[in-house]
Length: 335
Length: 213
Ligand SMILES: [Zn+2]
Image (cartoon, rainbow over all chains, first blue to last red; front, side):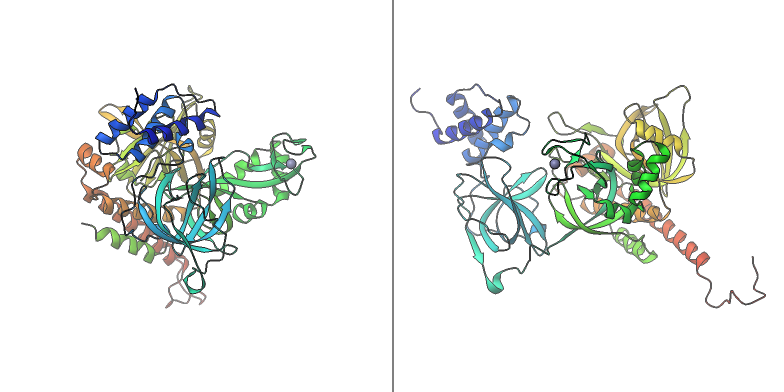
């Protein structure tokens, strides 16, 4: 076999397979087989760029990779942009694989989750936030700065963990907007709001033991040893680790001792009295759950996708007759 | 509408009148984490549900350490609920409840085989007694989400609705009417409570001689 069809794309699949090897996932296949698989996709009107992603994903999945997506970086843009792209706001982002124009302020940038990742963080506009990511060697060169507003055009949407996000690639132009063109969003004071029910509570809540080191504060299984700091004398603390659910999405929230007290009416002293009375530490979690399960709460803070960083919250008031009348009228107007 | 794992499946809000008809169950998605889901007649997959209502029954079979069941009533009907060997905390909590009580339930949407085909029930993950006001919040929340499902039912891209129409021949009107009746019932209860706590402005409750009946 001298010349192989789609050689560039076969190489891209090879790159994805190689990057999975560090996790002990190895795929036995030939370039010809990869090429044929890409050609099979092309005949079903799938662009070879997209086929790279599908073929890599299927090979990695067969080899036992739980999350093949993480190994597939470059060369997987769903379809090329087509001239004029619609300008969408954060709240309008629902479809993956769309080329759009997006204007947003960087409110957070965090460290890459994988070595192949270059930048990641969150962008905000007036309607909400969206995660962004760029991969190494993707050709996206702009170093995004927290607090600055950018116009991205074109930029492609992708899906990760059930959420739509923006993938910045070599095709993406990022223009910094200044003065009146900037959005005027201050990363230090920016907050988002979610409303939902506390439907579930997780382990490592209630009365917990923490590493006493100010910079660590890790929750400890063994009160005498911190996995990061070594031998320590733990500090007892209270926290709540709950799931907020609005019927469509759910987030994990952490509430500190003061926040837990204000919602569940349980001071540290009362918690200690409970433990003494029942001779059992788990009673503190049970008490908090009995107080908070099923409560409707509005949280203010930062959306991190799977979790939500709480800065403030309030219990929602039960509905008035008028509130119910509005819902009733909405139902009555349905066909 | 992505069912992409491993995000946690949200708890759907549904009235008993609709849930009783959710008899079609399917394992959704591929891979190890593929969750079991029941199809709501108004066109949404439910792995989990969040319910509020009056716990009206608890049946704790003394011969079976690891099983307990009960019944939860909302303004439109009743939900069968139960807990088994994999939910020891739920069993313990259900044993402590004394019907009738207002409770909140988070649980898995599942079906069991009844005499005439599958019957939906809720496998309890968490159950707690709650203040009465949460009942009102839940009815509003559930009525709103029912309205949203009904609004989206005829969207072309709504595969769950298309399957619901095929499986159940869904008659949307009855679910809309049940939701309307639920909101009306709670409105009535709130009005009655207000009448009890707020004295008639024309009356003078402190004046002597006012009847006590
Ligand atoms: Zn430490």
